[in-house]
Length: 432
Image (cartoon, rainbow, N blue to C red; front, top):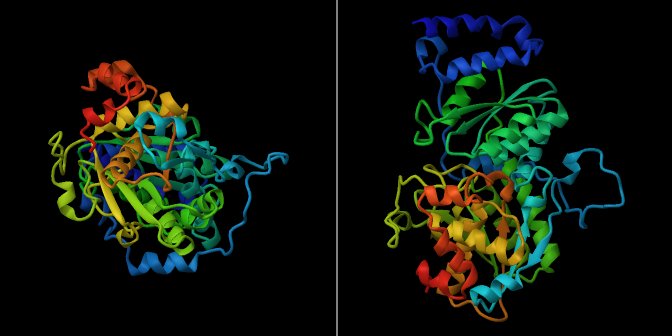
């Protein structure tokens, strides 16, 4: 009763000065923290609904076409020029030929890594953080000083926090407990308030990060840009990431492999690549425990580990228990499912053999690519590119830490053997 009364009392903040953005951010933080610990009560808060995520629909398709900005500006970052801000260091990420890893894994095709961790904030999601804020500014939806609220698994949050810090917005992030402390500390340092939610909460549960964001937006007169249905998400990749891939490969690319989270990266890249590179095939990687892969039967159960729908998995930032609006599955030709153990082992192999300091989901993406290459006998003369979404910076206390790995059931003895002994990775994880 006391908590409900306290929350009702905060409603005075929603009129007068709060509407003009004149109150201290600490006032909003106090309200947000109370709401997190207060069960939703419609009698106090009024009706609050979760967004309706349905996969690619007419609304996002219309925005996707309406908001396109025209021809791509080719070329990399002009390093001889002084940048105006870190936002100028988003995009134009390098591509690396991974000949050493290919040799170790005994792969005959050429494999390339698109290294998105070279973005200023450390991940591919810097692109959508910048684009979604800029689109909201152009439309007049947001202005300097406003409160932005976002449910995220971390990297989109970092991208948004970086842009918000530079542009003068106040940021509240709703983040499941599973996500790493490194992500939390990065966003805090960028000025955000972090509200943690239960990892096990379903996306539309009353205690989920998505539902809490909707409650906070209503209570604080804030804005949820919503990466799960914002056309700026796939557009950032359609007009940016994919164009870079085309320029870097000279349009000579047979397969593009990406992991699926919101689906914005894979959708935006796929749509552009298929326009510009005839015959290219798009491969999406999805962890067991998620329901994104198609057909639905792929999600049922891992024959090797038994993981299936609803299983909690350790890899961060990919896979979901709902279908985000920004994913267009029609653009994806193949799906591959992965387990945590092979993902973390492949991540160690990538770091060991290529010196690329990638994050956990990158290991999953490469593990899926390797499985796809072997099972489909993709050999010499073919070129496969893999998008690496983020860096090891976010996971120094998790999959980069041997003690954490062992405590969570991942044998470092076996993983090290996959790094040192040709053929052992394929044998251990049953890759045909």
